Structure formats: structure tokens, C-alpha cells
Length: 175
Image 1 (cartoon, one colour):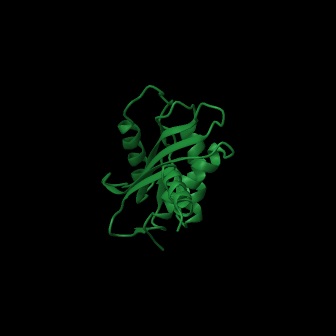
Image 2: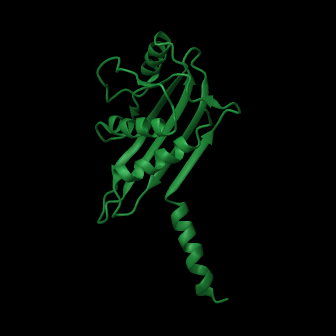
């Protein structure tokens, strides 16, 4: 075997592995897909305006596709503060709203990165974290986070949709 024949696959695998990473912490108990779910507004920790709202639409579709029903969107408790560093008050408001609606789970999360990199190709870069909490106790039941970059010919929405699909696919659902 020549050096060229094994060098290309090695370089390719290293390049592709640098483009994505995910971390998941799951419960050992599956979550009931039909128990009643709320989707809270996603916090936007990126420098891109409305990144949370953009991602939330995709996340809503992905959760529906996985049979999470009923799924209701938590209304915003007030205007978005782009300078807020902690979204604990928003999370508490979402949990309170879900309790009033007699829902079981609340999906929360944050957009940490959402932009096109500078340069000739302008590759998309996305970083997202998702959590599922018990609506009554606020206990963290499941979480996943990931980041992904794309090539110059890919779109930001495509890269983010692929990443969120990977994260939601790992959600331990019982039907």
C-alpha cells in the first residue's frame, strides 16, 4: 500500500470530523412523546439578530416529525433583551406557563453560534444546545449540544437544520 492510498482517507476523515461535534446527556427513562410538550423561545447568544426565532421554527417541525404531540409554543414573557447574559428568568416563566397549561415537558435551548464565517467562501457555522425539563420541577431530563460548520456552497439554514435533526434524533422518546 502506497503512502498516497492511505493518506487521502486519513486527511478526509480528519477534515470532516473537525466540521461537527455533538455532546449528549440523556436520561435512562424514555420521555413520553404524547405527554404534553411546550417549546420555549430559544435564547440567542449569537451575534446574529433573531437567530433563536429562526431556529425555533425548524425545531418545531423536527419535534412534530418525531411525534411530539401535543406541542405548544410558549409565548414570550416580554421583549427580547439582546444584552441579557442569563436567561434563567425566561426559563422560569416558560416552566410556569407550561404548568398552567398542564403540560409535562418543556424544551428549552440556546443558539450559541449562527453566522457565515468571513473570508472568500463564507462557510456557515452553527452552535446549538437543547434541553428537556420537567415542567413541574424544572429538573433537567435530557440535554444535547452541538456545533457544525459547512462548506462555502452550503446554507446556514441547511447546516442548522442538519445539526438540529441530529440532536432531536437522539431524544429518547417513548410512543
